[in-house]
Length: 241
Image 1: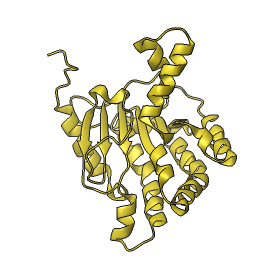
Image 2: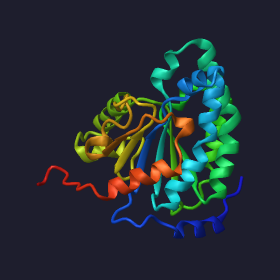
Image 3: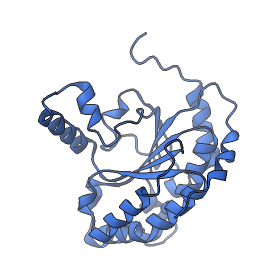
């Protein structure tokens, strides 16, 4: 897999706004309801959702964002029916590399956040292979949360911080899955629900939250642009005024 360095030229186009979020978190909800709406099996909804990732991420980067963290598979997803869980894992197995190739083509790099040991070894190998192609630290980052739990992440970070003999805010943040990344400036949830559902709980302390009834497979660049424009007109005080 090779990244396309020339794709960086696409980053020249940005929204005509005062501020663009650097780090955007996305809770991609509504795949199953999209499938029901179209009288399709659930797996078809998840495939449609996967197909929508690259266009939305590409537009976020074109507008000026530098990091997009996607809630791909939560620890709670593992509690769904065996058939649906297996279908989700099969989708990851089939789509991780092709999706990464498309993201490399638009000049992005990819990494994964979460406890990947849950997945079969071949899926872990795919993740490791994708990450090995992240050769440009300045490239926009797609951070995929896989078997991710915000609560478990905080517990894990605290345990690792304690093992180091130093429990401070800094030592905890060094042991988060997002270590080295800025906190998300905004978090978007599609599908009509208005909650974080265990996503980036530590990091979202001052994130601007955006909710839409649009189901993830139907979420597009136009709606994302509206959200970015609204973000640019919000005043972020971080509790200081």
